[in-house]
Image (cartoon, rainbow, N blue to C red):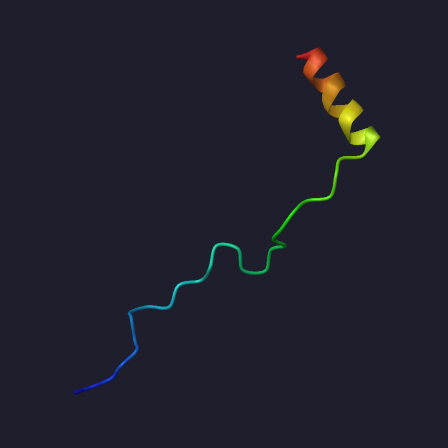
Length: 41
């Protein structure tokens, strides 16, 4: 019997090289920027 662990072509994870986990909270400047854009639209 052959105990090969090759499962086909190797796939790259979708989150490779990205930061994962919880994002930092929004700053007041970012909140107001979104609020103004929503009001203008």
